[in-house]
Image (cartoon, rainbow, N blue to C red; front, side):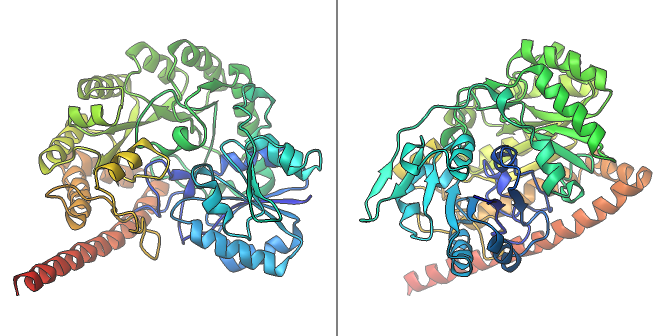
Length: 489
């Protein structure tokens, strides 16, 4: 079956790949690669990967493209699910022979709810690589495929047993070859990475137990599985040779440097490529490992610091302390590594005082760039269960507005929706309008013409969203005041 792998255009600028903490269009246009879809696509030579939003393809255009295919594999998300279903229905109306399969975290959590949409023929829970390939090639029927759920003709549901995770990752194809075949890599932009960049995984799964993180709890699991260092280095070498103008390779693992020995082994081999790399990192990484990474060509680390309140880190089972974060940032900067710090407003136990601590903590760390997210309790995560049990979540509240920007659906005693959004803005403002932070941005603009253009574009996008958030805060407070006045009357 000729197969279309679709990362759908749920919203303009929507980046479904950022789902663990950021379920929406972000402040500044950013796109991560559709890595999960590219693995099975690499095993089906006549397939196509369509990363619609990143490649500038509209919903109408996506519907027309689907006319030429027999199987649609759509990677869905919680905030984009309703749009995805409507789009799949339009595709099937135009192409009745099209079989529709949904994959992604929502199908693992609520398979029967997903399949109640009759346009969806079947789903694959968790990892889906080999199941899709076997079905598309006609090697197995749906009832023979592990992890598959589907409807019988009488409307009842079948949920095949899980088949276990893929252990030998070296047997999977290189996703970079699919990027070369189907994607324009110059269209992928992340503000803190060099442009153009590519990203892929060197591992799957994450041993950390963070309660808010979507992927290990709903999709890739906590079992940490590794590609061999030779396989990773060989793919890097191929990418460097086949993507003219490539400036950086980013390892988008949930946890890249979790194991010291493996990281150092890989770094010793990457160093021979004489290229620039970046990756995710935990604050538990020691100074010797950071030095090995720097010597291998690593430039930037994305680090989830999350909060400056120790009790909140305990509440979310972060497995790290505030002091570890400080020591990590100090070591990284001493060695000459750049740090992009991730922080979250609205985690369990949040108060005005804890937010103040987190802002002070971020300033103390002085990361080169930061991202501040509203806490997003996704179904299927321990965080969602906690919020539901304690009455903190509005279950019918939207996670995004009509254009895909994130909305809060949590509320804590003394912290309403408007204030949570306002704290995000105050966090960014207080952080970036410090002299040393502002000078870093000005220096980039002065000495790098390419960065100057990017910074100008990013500034316009961020200021537009800031105005929108201010309107949201004002509207929320106006509605609250009106409600209180009504009660008083």
